[in-house]
Image (cartoon, rainbow, N blue to C red; front, side, top):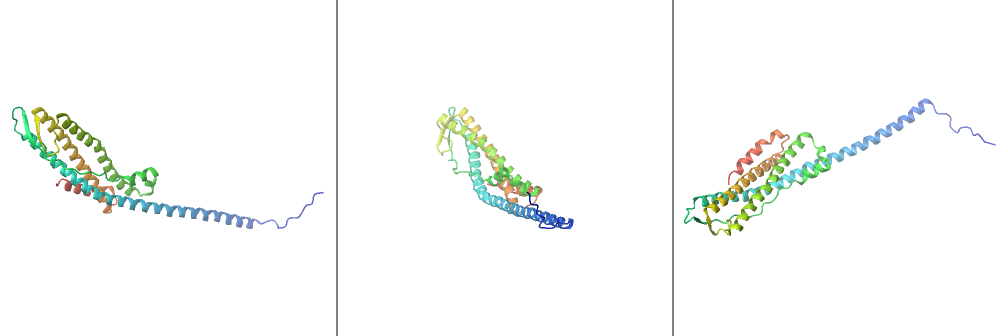
Length: 239
């Protein structure tokens, strides 16, 4: 025999139903709102950290730019002087004898591009307002252009090194060299190639420097950057 128990609570009214439903919906909305608030706070923190890290990287790079430009100026001066020595040497018996100046030595450091690279790979670039993303991307683009020159500069230097090994007369140690006229012309051509590469190297290094200075000055749009880049470029031409 089945016992049938009467309900312990009276049937809920329509008003009570909608009251309970409203409480449930309100709880869901509060939970969603809290989640979105936490996410917004987290994104704001990440955005501030990205901006601050990029500015720190620009500031650190300015020190590298100064050192690199100093070395590049010395190299360019040596290349111009060496070209003048080779071209002005008076031939005697089909040879020239020239006492070369020692080439300046010093390590050229690579400025950092890690902050923007990581931001792009992690998708954090999307956290930035469009105007700042364009500014930061312009800085990185100047760095990319500079980086593209490294291969050509290294290749030009290797060709010059191969030449000195082949003829047995080092051009960069400050010694006295004896070259045929054909060898003199080859050496001048190789040094001229190196000069062209170092001039381009200087230009793009200065562009990167100017773009970084614009960030530290607080520019808010890409259109505000060219003045900084032009000033840095003009300054880089002064040895």
